[in-house]
Amino acid sequence: MKMTVKAIVIKEDNVDTDVLYPGKFLNILDTKKASEHLFEGLDPKLRELLTTGPTALFVEENFGCGSSREQPASAMKASGVQCIFGKSFARIFGRNCVNSAMPAFINPNAVLAVKQGDDVQVDIETGVVTIGNVEYPSAPVATLPQEIVKAGGLVPWVKAQRITGSSGSGIVTS
Amino acid sequence: MATTLVEKIISSHLNGKSVEPGEIVMLPVDVVLGNDASTNGAITVLKNMGVDNVFDPAKVVTVADHFAPAKDEQSAMLLRTMEIWAKLQGVKFYAQGRGGIEHTVLIEEGWVVPGTVIGGGDSHTCTYGALGAFGTGLGLTDIACCLALGAFWQVVPETILVTFTGNRQRFVTGKDLILAVLEQTGVSGATGCVLEFSGSGAQALSIDERMAVSNMAVETGAETGFFVADEVTREYLQNRTEKPWQPEQSDEGAHFVRQIHIDLDALDPLIALPSLPGNVAQVREAKGRKVDQVYIGNCANGTMTDLRQAAEMLRGKKVHEGTRAIIVPASQKVYKQALAEGLLDVFIDAGAMVSTPTCGACFGGHNGVLAAGERAITTTNRNFRGRMGSPESEVYIANAFTAAASAVAGEIVDPREL
Image 1 (cartoon, chains in turn purple, green):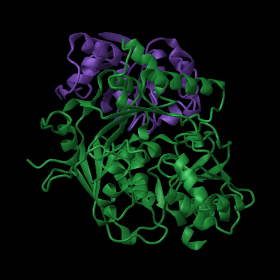
Image 2: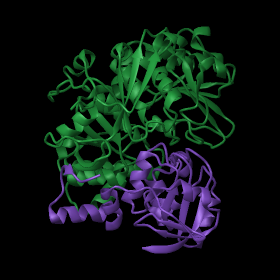
Image 3: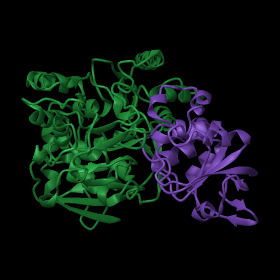
């Protein structure tokens, strides 16, 4: 599924969940209201870049480290972020992105190539991003996270598991 | 084939199926944990999944700790909603005044035994590695999945073996051991891995100190950080749980993706400088920096061990004028024991505040947040920008001796020099 999105570039390693979504707002459950505090500790002006339509974030190393709070991922998703390309991601944030069907792709070359505000083409199923005329494939994604994204996130995936009765333990594939 | 401890734990949850790093499995949970900051979101997601009842009420625990006692009406509603839900579902609920900070409570109440898998809606669920359990933090949608299916998706991790040898000097604690690890791994060096703590220096640690070490495993990027269950573990678990468990360890010849060795004889008290837990230095390198607030407490460092260390530095002394000290026993049990040992007298006589157990200011929620321009030294686990309040405040992380000594000095000081 290809679409054109605007690139938002965050040039900083180890951007943590405390700056993406400060702890004092953890008592906000409404995703729309939570979105009003996205990036609050990093640079609240980044929120303005999200208002122009669908976007993709381009980030550096270990993005999303820290807390298990899901608001950074869910607020990004609710604000129109389609997917994220980064040099690397922290574990729980990466999971939260998959579960929210807003995949986090490892793609250092795309991060090097992109400029703030570029219009780029993304395929959120394959992770291929086109900047200018150059295609940048992302690192391969394991089958299960891919399935979850394809299903539209962990909620519909769990629903489907329950219907087919295939839930429970077992190796899924790598 | 020689296997690692984490592979054994995962395999034992999949009817003995052998697993390899990088494989993805649906990993069954023995315990699912939620707090007032994660449970309510998970309840909504669970409804969206079309699930009315949790998979097994006996395996679900909820704890009121993040915004408890309620900091405002919104938080009060979260606490209330979680309580009503927990009672309706018939799951364990540790109410305000009946528990404390989740990870300390689950460990002291016997929910955590070696070899089990615990999925928690809090990144510091890795604290359960202190007892040899695979405790790991999950987002609220993953928690809802655990509540629905009794399992979560997990990539089988690699293992980094951390060996502690030698003897600790006085004033060097579990906190310094994990800061020494962070000095080597940074905040992402263990991503995709678990840490396995071994060696005579690891075996010599009490459960309280093992908690301090495992608690910050997530700060290295790791999924969790284990200690191999031993006699110390067995003694701790006696009279706490009836759940059966077997001591397990990595086989000889098992594959470790990296090995880290830390010589405790050469280890000084350490400190994490702003604004990264991996920004580790010797305490003396930060010496003389004035502190506005000292905060002793969190999910692994508000234990009796920490409070006794703090009291040792504060006994007969005063918190420096211009500095405030907040001491947060991690659970009601710890609070009561501190009272019985006269530690609360020591703290109050020194001019420190003693708070009811809460996650409070550790995550910037309430109960001691920092103003712009303020500097704190804490025994907590994160010092990211704005972690405890204003983005223009600074947090230094150290052990309880260093934090309490700094309260007396009014500035960061090596506890050996007070």
